[in-house]
Length: 574
Image (cartoon, rainbow, N blue to C red; front, side):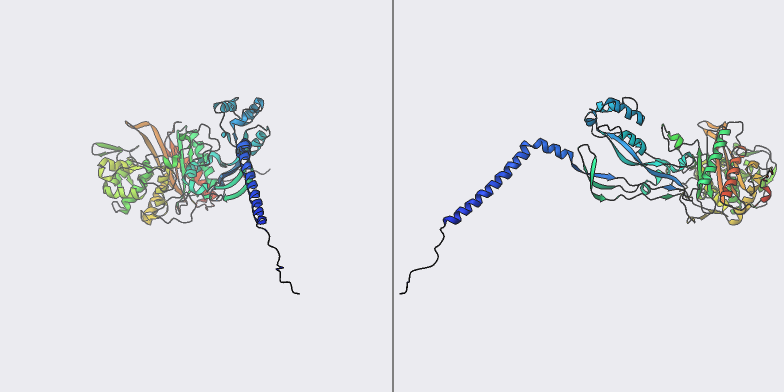
């Protein structure tokens, strides 16, 4: 018999699902309660503890110093380099509990006055960062750290070092404690040398010490090296000879410039008195001022060759011109005088004897605008363009304001002024067969800014005249150069005062070149206020020219062209 009753499984009651949902809700609520309770515990009950832990571990971005580029001479010899050093700083808050005897030991190590650090702490007890010593040697830093003083820290920096010291100090300049250029080429080429600082992310502890590097954010870019035109060997030679001359002549100061006559490179530029850029305590601006580039003086008779060249080139005088003088020449209401009555002179004797009257006669034959234009093209009244900070432009009065006496005096170097560098540059127009060169403190092969001022023939003619200045009959016998022909011109210039020209103070100047037929070097020497009994350019500055020129030509391996004047070297046989 068939059973037709329903045999399907019995359905679960709805209460099972409801109870599981409630259980889940209870579990979630318990979890939320735990999280809320934990948050309340951390933010209210344990707040101070967490703050301390956070203070102990801080993420910070710090600067990574870039290495400053080197300054080198033309042969790669370093003139300015950066070396790693350490700086010491303190946290006043942490140092309050430091032992006084340890603080005194640190002060002694760092050369600080007794009690200096303690007074700094007392001035601002909450100060967390204060330098007490900058750029000390790593060895000294380790001695300080060995004291294990709480609140004393160090950081790596760079310090500038100048291997040549005072020899190139005026030229290279120096940086400040932040390694930023303050003078000379360090200032002029700051952007090139300084590079770009980088940065990194670090973890510091509660004492601000770096305990871990997290990541490099930006890599530092080192500064570029600066290669100068200077030859440190010639620079040293010029420095020593100028120093001797200033001391022997009891002079106020001196400047000397050596130029390459072929491309206008500055091979040496020195000044006296000097300074050492490695030791800059109580440094005065008057000591580190580069007088060769930034100070001007009236060039005196050193411009006379330009007047002769201008008159010849313009056809205002003939090569065989004769000048009749009697020691005095009336120009309007004024008088031009020579030191002696030279009588009748040709062009060579006007240069050789340095006749004011002779060049005045030539100057008055030329239109004022023409002579002014020659001077202007030679670089007088305009910057020499070397790129050195604070370079002088000099002054030259406009020709429209010249009276006849102005035309006369400017022919023998009064009524205009120039720096030693400007005067040296102007002489390139005579040394390189009429071509005026730009000047450069950076090494280069050629000069792309050459300007013709005189014809080659005129320049060669005037050079030969200037060669006679160095003979016994000329004004600069002391300027002759052993083994080489040389040419030049003296200048003995009265110094101007507010009431006129003094009869007691002079600039002693000499400008010259060698060898005569194919000049390689130009040297200008200016000595300010020699006071040891002689003041003529031919007696004070000419000997410096002689010694520096002879040494520099040999350094550059220029072949002698007058071997009969070379000194004889005697060998003593034992």
